[in-house]
Length: 129
Image (cartoon, rainbow, N blue to C red):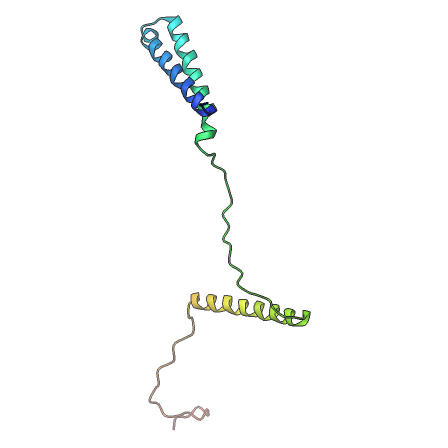
């Protein structure tokens, strides 16, 4: 049974990391050749991981989020005149719904009714009765 490419890349990565770890102690002790070997094997492990990544992790992509409203209006008129009338009525209904929604959110700024005074009626001539 043949292995998949990503499985081979995993194998290569594991072998390179194993070799890098064997060189690590000598590299820490100051062995220049061991340090070069360590970084070489570490680079191979990194390359194998990068080659395998597209097969294991999806790329993230920037996408625009849109708020799509369902269009539940169905124009079913048989003649062009009926379809036009239905379209116009649907537009009017949508505008009325938007106006009602705005009215629900609006602040009521109408003045309160003035309190009733127990004063005699004034006939407008400036004199009190």
